[in-house]
Length: 580
View (tube, helix red, strand yellow):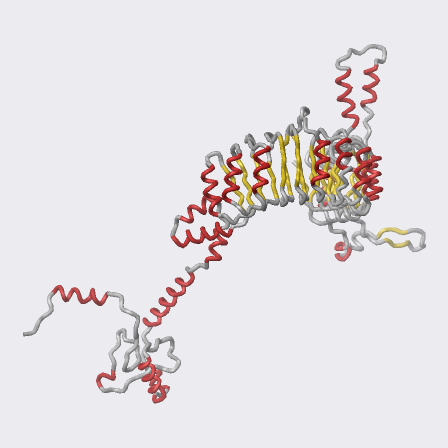
């Protein structure tokens, strides 16, 4: 009895056929043609056609026995039989689709190193979100945290110390850390850094506006003592230090700002190379700068850069520093010391003859002090900053530009100020609102002196000067510069500089700052630097008359200006004029 297939079995047949087949032979084992839509002629006893040698994009059998059969029968065929072999086009489309699928799958595999480089551009919060995508991304994020060497983190008021601690524990190999605090900070943050980062080398704390640094001097000293690998420490907002005793054999750079009323400062850092101490601008600051200078000279013999900003700086503090005889000192910056005079300059240039940078901004030195600097440091000094020095004149600056051939930076902002204006403001306070009478009073005589304002001119010719800052020099009315290497010029608030008395011979100028200047002065700068309103030069040739008496110019309609002569005009470099 024959068994007829039921409806269920008939419907199940296409289901079984729809199952994905395993990859095997796509060609017929007898003739080698594709199996899809193919009826083999060799089954009826006819001649078996075979594949051409080139293949025309058709697949060969995957099994070795079929390869041997086809290779044995291919030489028996002629060119006509190969040409008459039907080639279905569906197979080629399937092959192209298979190739495209394989190519996209390989392209989707991104190397781990490339993935890490992409993740480095993300913020810490974005990295945490990326780690939650899949296991592979979590491994890449973990690898990136472990291999990180530098981290810059902004701590918002909503971030707790636990979040920062968990984040720092993921990157135990971190060597440089910068925290931008948007909330108050205390010693808990220092303890978290000590516990999480044993190999930290550089640590920096930046404070934003309206935030308070509550770290005391004892806590900061303990932090430096525990971090034996620490080489750089920069902390802002040190208003609660009080007492400071820093001892470290690895520390080389120390920056502390907003210091106030330090009772005692002791530094025991034999390898310290750079120190920057910025004090608050309060008159009641009771810090003993003389003792601090003596301690710096005795306990930090390798200092090369010193920057101290305080209104309490005086000649005694400078003499205490010069008595230390720091042989490696190359950069000295004593800012806002209005009681520093030419006597302090004499002691500085007599002890430190290899200075490359000297910053005495805010001091009371005069042109005599500048001459002493030029006499001792002509072969080493490259940067001279004398801003906010009311006793110097344009003659002293011109003398420095002539005697110091290696100068690359001169800053004398607010030094050449309008003396008549300050004299007028001071006398108005002395004799306000006095009634006029028939006789000349003292205040009337002073008013005639006020109208006679004294202005100065500045002439600088230098071959190596690159940056010149004259911001706020309202006492200048004439400026002549011949500096081929100058690329930055600051003329902000030069209100009395006359446009017709400005001459710039600086072909390499890139930036000119002219905020607060007159519109005519800005136009004169554009005229000379940007070459926007340059007058056309007279290129018309001259010709003698017939009798040879005099020369006359050839009319324009007779002789035109040649293109070659136009190109000979001097082309100035493109420069940006910054003004408001």
